Image (cartoon, rainbow, N blue to C red; front, side, top):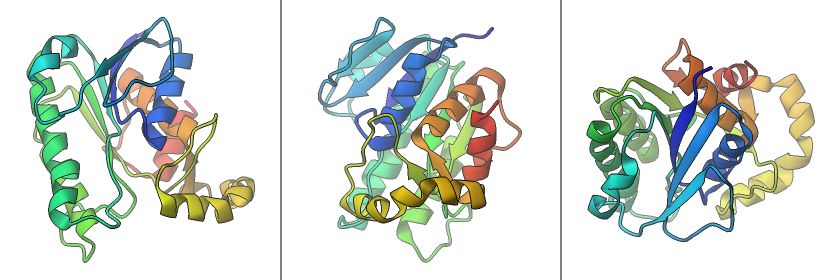
Length: 225
C-alpha cells in the first residue's frame, strides 16, 4: 500500500484543518508537514509544524520541503472586502511561488489545489475571484508535478470540531447547517464536508482519479473509495 508524505498549507483554515485531521487519522499517511504562521495546538507523532511568516520568501524552510509526494494546498482567502490586487497576490502569486519552489525539491508530488465551485477555466467570468482561481489552476497545470487535481467544492459542512473563520460563511452555515442531512440526501452533488475533502485528497494521491477538476460530486465519490 502506497504511503503518503504530505505537505499541507492553510491548516489553520476550515478546509485545511479538516484535511489535516483526516491525514492524521489515516494509516495511508505516514508523515504530515504543515506550514503555518502561528503554531497550532495539535500534537501527533507523524505531524511536524513549521512556523513561517512570509510565504513569498521560503528560503529559510527549503530544507523542510524535500522528499514529499503530496501537497494539499488549502491556503486561501475570501475575496469579500479586499482589493483585487490583494486577492490576486494571495490567491495566484503566492500559490504559484510556493508551487515553483516545491517542484524541484519534491517532483514526485501530487498537487491538490483548493479552488471553488464556479471557477472559470477560460478566465472570462464576470466574477474576479473566479478568473483569478482559474488562472491559478491553469498555470499550476503547466508545472510538471506527478499529478494535479483542482478541487472545486461548493458548500462544505465543517465537521469534527472544524469551524470557518469567514463571517459570511458562518452566517450561511447557521442557516443551512441544520439542513445538511436532508440536502446531502436529496442533492448530494451540491454539498460535501471537510472529512470528505480530506479523504478525497488522500485517495487522489494514493490511487489517482479520472478527472482533473473535482466538483462536489467527484469529491464525494473519491472520498468513498
